[in-house]
Length: 254
Image 1 (cartoon, rainbow, N blue to C red):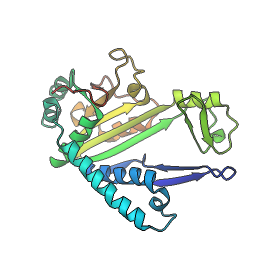
Image 2 (tube, rainbow, N blue to C red; image 1 turned 90 degrees about the vertical axis):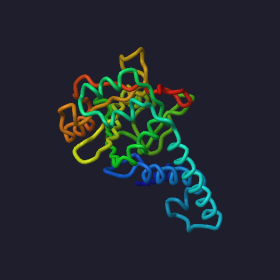
Image 3 (cartoon, rainbow, N blue to C red; image 1 turned 30 degrees about the horizontal axis):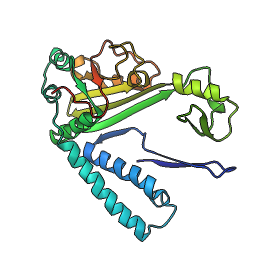
Image 4 (cartoon, rainbow, N blue to C red; image 1 turned 30 degrees about the vertical axis):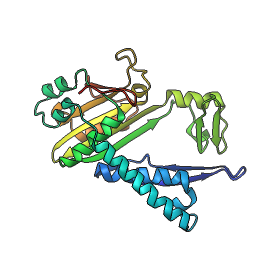
């Protein structure tokens, strides 16, 4: 997992970025555990996590505690009851059967994580591919090193930029973002992907219901082409099934 530190030389402000990269054919449990460990250690002991400081006794004790917490969280996910339709999806042999199983299905992110772990137990590996494209009228050479919109709507940025806060907000709001997770075993694969618009409820589906898109090897499109479309600014994969994504704590359909 990549870790990158960005420093504003004038103010000393630091921004540490981790994760977010593509990966291929990993065990979901191993990837999740690494992500959990790094994210929590970055909050508690960031300088030790990225190797700037030598590990201290406190840092070592923190690491042991974090390992236990992340392991317990993994166990918690494995205990989540999965929707029967989601389990049957891995067993389906026809496209029509998969589409029927997904009709009306609702899950939350905890259930999706539990499903990835279940798939691992069935011999599947996990790959991730993503892309981000900003509006064509925004000059990439003028972008700051990093920026984000805070809860009060103001823009927090690191690095020089000639762009106004309004232009940076526009770049955030209109950017095209796609993230795909692909479970695969041999020639069989299942792709679940979301877009910035789908996760924000800005697509015209069920009055703005956040959702995943789904496609598999049974849809007659090569996996390489699916990845190519995920990487493109606008994807063309036809009319795909949707899986409603509900909030944390909402009881999914069983």
